[in-house]
Length: 113
Image 1 (cartoon, rainbow, N blue to C red):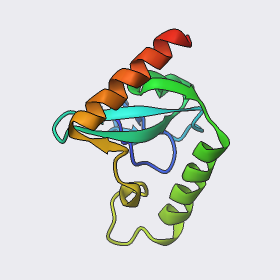
Image 2: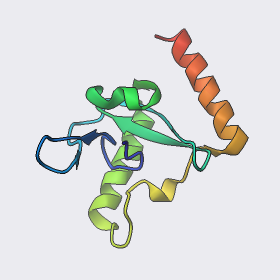
Image 3: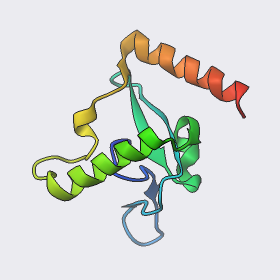
């Protein structure tokens, strides 16, 4: 399970006796997350522990930090009636364009280990 529209790491931490919780670690990478049921690609963020949940994870860029800051601001101030801070951003691509974006990202990641 991964919460791609989270205002931080989208990873989920599973516990032995408690229900799962959102990861509270600082995101260190950005990458793509593909939702097969809607054929959509989203920008997601993860800590080192959850980086493998993303497609082609890479180090955070200044623009990624800006997106995270906007999500955190939304989470603090505008979350009434919304489940996720990244909802308003929408997906990066849908349908065949999403699948092409995933393939390009995988090729990039293979060329930049």
